[in-house]
Length: 100
Picture (tube, rainbow, N blue to C red):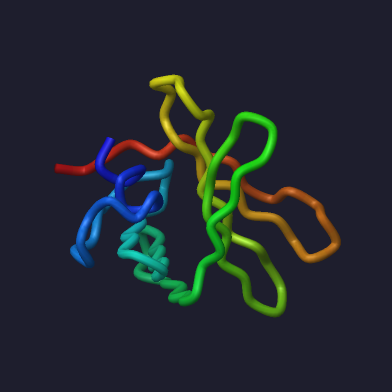
């Protein structure tokens, strides 16, 4: 899946686009751009790459939420988008489906 190559730093700065339920997400290097069907968008920069317990991912944050893209290492499962409030309450979890 191309998005994993971006998160792992293998691909150039071109963006990958995915669908996560009702959201469209563009990711390029350390930038995260997510929009809903009504055109409400979030732009976050300077994501942090991580590896923990057989999972890899990248996290972007703002004052209220953490936006996490994660996937299991060594398995061909789809990556997930997880949004967590700063009090650690998960408010969204969706599988990422690449858009060609």
